[in-house]
Image (cartoon, rainbow, N blue to C red):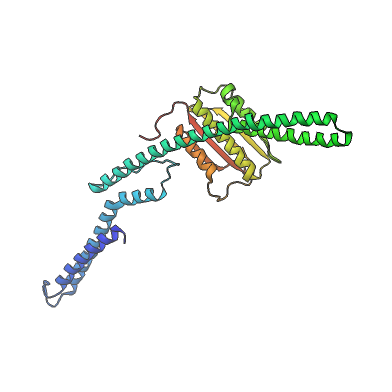
Length: 317
């Protein structure tokens, strides 16, 4: 039973008992006059209503705190409940806010370590793909060419087909390595990296267009990497789930910083739950104090919007 009703019923029992005693042998008149009974009944109802209103007002901060507790999501921070109420209630809300701040800080720290380890592992895998698998396939191509040059014409044609298949596999491995480790981001910057991402992004029936402002403000390496990874994940989700024909990637300057948009004309999100990719984007956004919105795009489809402030700071006091 809720705390409100427990307190209210306890008070009601006391008041009803008192009224019953007044209506019994200890009443003012015996037998009880009709006017006295009416006055006592009206008084009882008035006391119960006043008691309910006062308790409802006094316990309102606890109801708001309960609502916040049931809907809180550390990946989508919101305003914390004000420390309203008296005594223990205000102290409880203040303690909850302190605990929530500590949880957000600990999650941000652990997420930063996890994402750093993930980037390091991607770098290692990309390096091995390029150095080991790539070089091996290159050697296979050279051997195939040498054998094809000395083989009979009918066998030579088949060997040339094998060469093309191997060459396609080598290009695919290089493309995967570039996506795992965006070297162009480190060497040429965010603008070139995003243009290369949209140019090289391949999905059946999907055309990707880009627009990147030329006057972007200076961004640190961590912010550039987060923007690149969110754009990459947004396009990947579009290719896998949206069934879209067109996707647009836009990075523009705003008065507060920069804004990234990835928009498609696909089937939309409907009521689909957020997957690991979307939650990964939210974690990356929190690391740089950015806001990530994911929802329907104007005119249909889905839109991912990442708003990055130029001067980053704590998201909450």
